[in-house]
Image 1: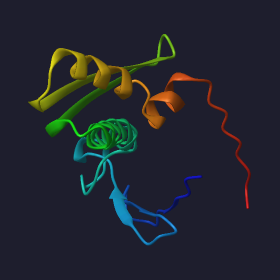
Image 2: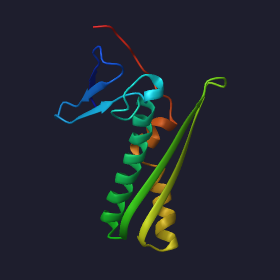
Image 3: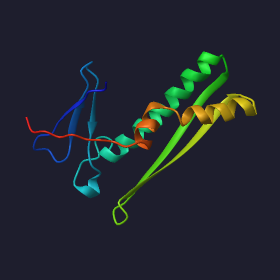
Image 4: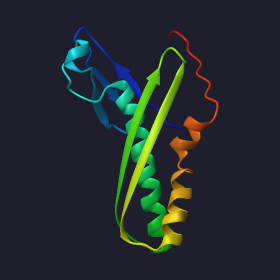
Amino acid sequence: MAKVSSHIGKELYRTDIASPGGSTLISDEPVENGGQNLGLSPTELLAASLAACTSVTLRMYADKKGWDLAEVNTHIELTRDEALNKTAISRSIQLIGNLDETQTARLLVIANSCPVHKMLSNPIEIKTELI
């Protein structure tokens, strides 16, 4: 189970995000939206989750198999069409290393099996309560 908390005060729109383990990061809006661009926007954080999960999943799998995967570069483009109430995510993955066609094909399958990909590809239920 993943847990995080966020806090925003009067400073537009800087938000401090923390995990129970002590990791922290800042989210903010770009200057053109009234923020100071001190960190990734909330939408960028969502895209970053998929990018990081994809890269880590591929690294773990290649390491487990003993494959010569030197680098994984994952690029995510997330767009939202408010009129259609639709979100589109494009993911491009660059695999650098000494891999054959069978290995690269398998890594594509594994990329589509990363936990965040699975979460975003299936129904999501969000329950909200005031405390």
